[in-house]
Image 1 (cartoon, rainbow, N blue to C red):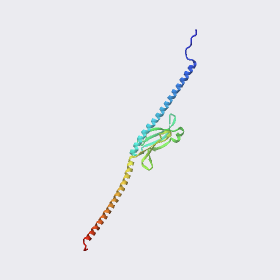
Image 2: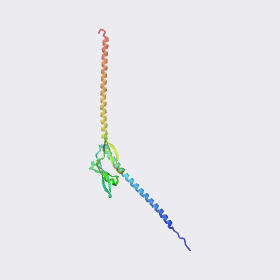
Image 3: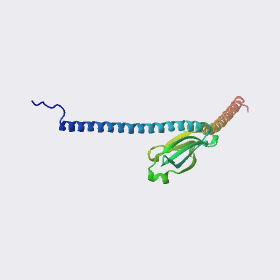
Image 4: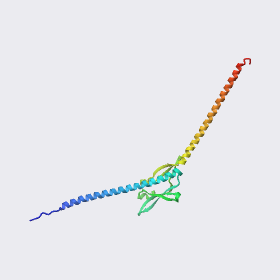
Length: 208
């Protein structure tokens, strides 16, 4: 008497393996995409943190005392056996102590030509405005600079006071001219009054 065999056939096993492989590949792709997204979010978060920190310190310093305290320098260095362009913001009041460092986003072929930047002040004067300063940070993609402007409060007040002083001088000059015109008018009225009195006197003495 023959007994029927129980189990999976070869075709069923191959189909199951194909389905399992597809599921594993899909899960792996999803994991890889999630990991890359996490890395990009972490990279953007670090950029934002650096930008907010630098902007707050530089903005407060320029508003109160003007530029010259913080400097920026970019140079190429080896990080994990790879060339990387690193920019450093330093505090000159603390002996050029590094305040914060961030990576300048450059392609490998542009590293040598676009990375190196000599030391420069964060806060360059804006033409035609003595109170406004331009701050550029190479923190964007492809090494592009993020630019914002900061006003020095004391310089703004000096400009306003100088303008008000000129206006006050013009107003005083106008007031002086108005006073002179008023005096001339009064003198004219006095002259007319004296003439009228003389005429009245002449009429009162017909014998004269």
